[in-house]
Amino acid sequence: MLWTVLPSQLLEFAAQQLFAMDPASAERLQKLTGKRVRVTLRELGKPLTVTVTDTSLQFSWVDDDAVDCHISTELAVLPELRDSANITRLIKADKLDIEGDPLLAQQLSKLVTALDIDWPEQLSQRIGDVPAQLLVTAFQRSRKRFGSWQQDNQQWLRDALVEEKKILPARPQFTQFQQDIQALRARIDKLERQLRKPRD
Image (tube, rainbow, N blue to C red):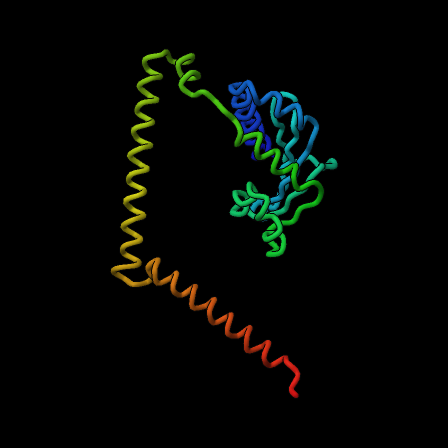
């Protein structure tokens, strides 16, 4: 029982702190106050119920009451739910099952993704202006270096797969392949139409 209570209390505390740092979140929370979403991840098997309050979110692993939306899916699928265009495809592929209002899950996701927190200001209130500025500058530099390193690695991997190992086709080859497929499809459609024509 303890393994379900402690994580949910930590999640609630973290959510409460984050929403308190963004003044605009109060209005977004009020629009969804009282709404309940249950998420069952196949990897865990145990459902997590999320209830929106006027100040934060409440999480429960043992709540069996009625909810506005129940989502059953896999952990890897969750990031894809941000785009509503993916929902139909995921349902057809049996990777997602939704009972209730599917838009509610997206609205709940936007509560967190739309948070606009002024981190430099929050840091300066807690540790002072100079240390906060040093931390923010160090973070920005490290993020820039990481972005550059990631871009270099992606380019190296692309070159290795396309040029050296010849595992993947180059962009012009792939484009030509697509055009050839479209031309072949057009020829097949033309032949099918000719075969369907009644003979004199």
